[in-house]
Amino acid sequence: MAVSILAVVAGAVTFASPARAATNPFTAAQACNNDFGGSWAYASDGHRTIYASDGTKVGDVYLMYNGATGYNCVATLKAVAVGSTTGVSAGIRVYGGSWAYDSGSYKYYAAIQRSAVDKCVMYSGEVLYATSWQSAGRYSWGNCG
Image (cartoon, rainbow, N blue to C red; front, side, top):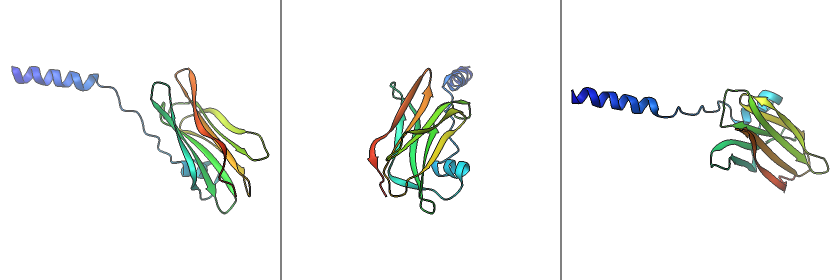
Protein backbone atom coordinates (compact mmCIF):
# COMPACT_ATOMS: atom_id res chain seq x y z
CA MET A 1 0.00 0.00 0.00
CA ALA A 2 2.84 2.44 0.83
CA VAL A 3 4.40 1.86 -2.59
CA SER A 4 1.07 2.56 -4.34
CA ILE A 5 0.56 5.83 -2.45
CA LEU A 6 4.13 6.90 -3.24
CA ALA A 7 3.56 6.17 -6.94
CA VAL A 8 0.38 8.29 -6.95
CA VAL A 9 2.13 11.20 -5.20
CA ALA A 10 5.10 11.00 -7.60
CA GLY A 11 2.72 10.96 -10.57
CA ALA A 12 0.83 13.98 -9.24
CA VAL A 13 4.08 15.93 -8.83
CA THR A 14 5.12 15.05 -12.38
CA PHE A 15 1.81 16.27 -13.85
CA ALA A 16 1.84 19.43 -11.74
CA SER A 17 5.24 20.59 -12.98
CA PRO A 18 5.19 23.30 -15.66
CA ALA A 19 5.62 22.31 -19.27
CA ARG A 20 9.02 23.00 -20.79
CA ALA A 21 9.22 26.00 -23.07
CA ALA A 22 9.66 25.20 -26.74
CA THR A 23 13.11 25.84 -28.14
CA ASN A 24 13.38 28.03 -31.21
CA PRO A 25 14.43 25.72 -34.09
CA PHE A 26 16.19 28.56 -35.96
CA THR A 27 19.59 30.16 -35.52
CA ALA A 28 20.13 33.76 -36.54
CA ALA A 29 22.15 32.62 -39.56
CA GLN A 30 19.29 30.37 -40.66
CA ALA A 31 16.73 33.16 -40.22
CA CYS A 32 18.79 35.56 -42.38
CA ASN A 33 19.41 32.85 -44.97
CA ASN A 34 15.72 31.84 -45.07
CA ASP A 35 14.58 35.42 -45.66
CA PHE A 36 17.44 36.78 -47.80
CA GLY A 37 19.65 33.90 -48.97
CA GLY A 38 23.40 33.84 -48.75
CA SER A 39 25.91 32.99 -46.08
CA TRP A 40 25.75 34.94 -42.81
CA ALA A 41 28.40 35.29 -40.10
CA TYR A 42 27.89 36.52 -36.54
CA ALA A 43 29.20 40.09 -36.20
CA SER A 44 31.43 41.14 -33.31
CA ASP A 45 29.40 42.73 -30.50
CA GLY A 46 26.35 41.49 -32.37
CA HIS A 47 24.25 39.76 -29.70
CA ARG A 48 21.94 40.91 -26.95
CA THR A 49 19.58 38.80 -24.85
CA ILE A 50 16.11 40.24 -24.34
CA TYR A 51 14.72 39.90 -20.80
CA ALA A 52 11.36 40.86 -19.35
CA SER A 53 11.21 42.87 -16.13
CA ASP A 54 10.38 39.66 -14.23
CA GLY A 55 13.69 38.14 -15.38
CA THR A 56 12.21 35.85 -18.05
CA LYS A 57 14.35 35.48 -21.15
CA VAL A 58 11.99 36.34 -24.01
CA GLY A 59 14.39 36.36 -26.95
CA ASP A 60 17.76 37.14 -28.51
CA VAL A 61 18.70 39.72 -31.11
CA TYR A 62 21.68 39.18 -33.42
CA LEU A 63 23.58 41.30 -35.91
CA MET A 64 24.82 39.22 -38.83
CA TYR A 65 27.10 40.08 -41.75
CA ASN A 66 27.29 38.76 -45.31
CA GLY A 67 30.83 39.33 -46.59
CA ALA A 68 29.87 38.61 -50.21
CA THR A 69 27.19 41.31 -50.36
CA GLY A 70 28.21 43.80 -47.65
CA TYR A 71 24.75 43.52 -46.11
CA ASN A 72 23.94 43.33 -42.42
CA CYS A 73 20.97 41.31 -41.18
CA VAL A 74 19.33 41.68 -37.79
CA ALA A 75 17.40 38.65 -36.56
CA THR A 76 15.32 38.57 -33.39
CA LEU A 77 14.64 35.01 -32.25
CA LYS A 78 11.74 34.41 -29.88
CA ALA A 79 12.28 32.43 -26.67
CA VAL A 80 8.64 32.64 -25.52
CA ALA A 81 5.49 31.59 -27.38
CA VAL A 82 7.75 29.81 -29.87
CA GLY A 83 5.61 28.33 -32.63
CA SER A 84 2.70 30.66 -31.83
CA THR A 85 2.03 33.75 -33.89
CA THR A 86 2.94 36.65 -31.57
CA GLY A 87 4.70 40.01 -31.85
CA VAL A 88 8.40 40.20 -32.67
CA SER A 89 10.52 42.88 -34.29
CA ALA A 90 14.05 43.33 -35.68
CA GLY A 91 15.50 46.77 -36.38
CA ILE A 92 18.63 48.19 -37.96
CA ARG A 93 19.92 51.71 -38.47
CA VAL A 94 22.71 52.34 -40.94
CA TYR A 95 24.74 55.52 -40.38
CA GLY A 96 23.19 58.36 -42.38
CA GLY A 97 19.76 56.75 -42.43
CA SER A 98 16.80 56.11 -40.17
CA TRP A 99 15.69 52.98 -38.35
CA ALA A 100 14.16 50.22 -40.51
CA TYR A 101 12.12 47.37 -39.03
CA ASP A 102 10.60 44.01 -39.73
CA SER A 103 7.82 43.95 -37.19
CA GLY A 104 4.81 41.67 -37.11
CA SER A 105 3.23 38.56 -35.68
CA TYR A 106 5.53 35.63 -36.40
CA LYS A 107 6.02 32.12 -35.06
CA TYR A 108 9.80 32.10 -34.65
CA TYR A 109 11.66 35.27 -35.64
CA ALA A 110 11.76 38.63 -37.38
CA ALA A 111 14.62 39.55 -39.70
CA ILE A 112 15.67 42.59 -41.73
CA GLN A 113 18.69 43.37 -43.90
CA ARG A 114 20.32 46.55 -45.13
CA SER A 115 23.46 47.41 -47.08
CA ALA A 116 26.11 48.79 -44.75
CA VAL A 117 29.27 48.91 -46.86
CA ASP A 118 31.73 51.31 -45.22
CA LYS A 119 29.10 52.44 -42.70
CA CYS A 120 28.41 51.88 -39.00
CA VAL A 121 25.20 50.31 -37.70
CA MET A 122 22.95 50.09 -34.63
CA TYR A 123 20.53 47.22 -34.06
CA SER A 124 17.57 46.33 -31.88
CA GLY A 125 15.08 43.57 -31.23
CA GLU A 126 11.72 43.40 -29.48
CA VAL A 127 9.47 40.57 -28.34
CA LEU A 128 5.89 40.95 -27.14
CA TYR A 129 5.64 39.32 -23.72
CA ALA A 130 2.21 39.24 -22.09
CA THR A 131 0.96 42.74 -22.94
CA SER A 132 4.19 44.71 -23.26
CA TRP A 133 7.14 44.86 -25.62
CA GLN A 134 10.55 43.90 -24.24
CA SER A 135 13.62 45.14 -26.07
CA ALA A 136 17.39 45.01 -26.29
CA GLY A 137 20.02 46.07 -28.76
CA ARG A 138 23.05 48.24 -29.31
CA TYR A 139 22.12 51.88 -29.62
CA SER A 140 25.60 53.20 -30.31
CA TRP A 141 27.46 53.04 -33.64
CA GLY A 142 29.57 49.97 -34.26
CA ASN A 143 30.56 47.32 -36.79
CA CYS A 144 31.86 50.03 -39.09
CA GLY A 145 33.28 49.01 -42.43
